[in-house]
Amino acid sequence: MSRLETERDAAERLGVSVRTLQKWRLQGDGPRFVKLGQAVRSGGQDLEAHMESSRRRSTSESPRKPGQPSGGPQSGNHLGVYK
Image 1 (tube, one colour):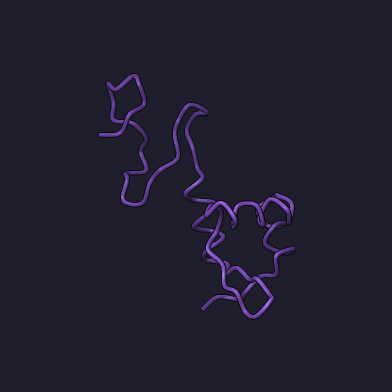
Image 2: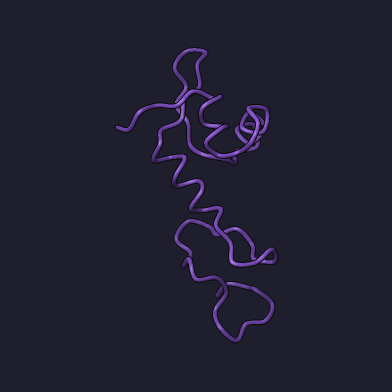
């Protein structure tokens, strides 16, 4: 297992505030995390996976769902809908 990052370290690495990470957790978004008593930690691989899943080619591209191809909408599909 990779080194576990504190909330502050994870937020800094992602370029967001600690409050944003907390909000994401409440909404079921953001990187996966580990809860150790009161402490919340995120693994480096989970932070990388979250950044990769947030990667976009344009502002109109919708977030990928697990199992969806990373290439964006299929060519010829001008509505940006995945098949």
